[in-house]
Amino acid sequence: MTQRAIPFHFLRGGTSRGPYFNRADLPEDRDALSAILMQVMGAGNPRNIDGLGGGDAVTTKVAMLSRSAEDGVDIDYFFAQVGVTERLVDYGPTCGNILVGVGPAALEMGLVPITGDETRVRIRAVNTGALVEAIIQTPGGAVNYAGPVAIDGVPGTSAPVALNFMDVVGSKSGAMFPTGQPVDIIDGVAVTCIDVAMPMMIARAADFGITGFETKDELDANPALFARMEAIRLEAGRRMGFGDVAQSVTPKIGLIAAPQHGGHLTARYFMPWKTHPTMAVTGSQCIAACALAPGTVAEGIARPVDAAPAIMQIEHPMGTMEVTVDFSRDAAGFKFLSAGVIRTARLIARGDVLVSDA
Image 1 (cartoon, rainbow, N blue to C red):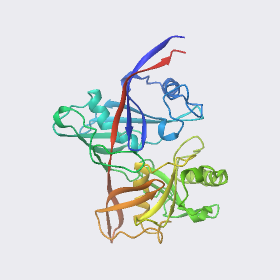
Image 2 (spheres, helix red, strand yellow):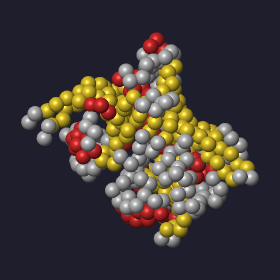
Image 3 (cartoon, rainbow, N blue to C red):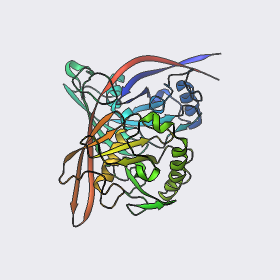
Image 4 (tube, helix red, strand yellow):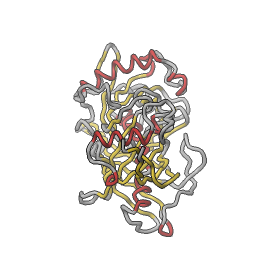
């Protein structure tokens, strides 16, 4: 069996990890691309034993980078979510954790020049159209990964990567509330269908018969919960204008509850067929927007935020994620303006991954 080599960098971005490719090294044809990515990650096996995947949705993610032709944008970031046990690739969503590694990877690949002790990289997430500015520490002309920042879900500390998200409202649908209202009733359950950085269906945990404080393992061991959520998610996707989402990971699911540890609210994020071990970066922005906007399912659950800008704390299974939010409330109504996070990344490996010509 003939194999050929494809260059890659392997990074942890936030609480996810995966290979980062130069888009020019991969085929343009979508079917051919999917076949390669499934082979690279070992899709179709619970351990991804024949690839680079880690047996979990947060470790079967792929970033593909290219220099942008758009004025004021440095890098186009194309994301793929590869299946774990299923042989499928979803190009619909983006991933904010993998996005954390895009700036460092682009600098390591030479796609963007280092400009000083800090380098700003403006990134277009082509899956959703979102524009993000990443600020990477580059003292001495090289990417620095060592630093004092700790994030829940990752051991140790690393250098900060600051992400400022712009144009996040209506990332896929063009509207904050794609159904035209802050609450929909689907099969007797109140849900907020909201599109900020990531389209989501958000509901109260209690309405699904759980507390919202369960661990990832406890939730993943509850198939009845997932069956109930999925049935409602399919209808939410249809109402949001996405058609049949049975084979798509969007909209994602969020279940919320009151805070336990001084945060603004508790959330469990689903990808959607497994529980996220921590919290997605894009999901944190969508949940924050839901907590701030009047009339959503978060009203009466989330601790209020009176003035902007503000730091919102979202409690998740392994700790807390902080989201810096800017918004306005006036006679014209509520507007979600921008969101920012501080995360970390690390280059783990680089070299070639081998794929079969077959």
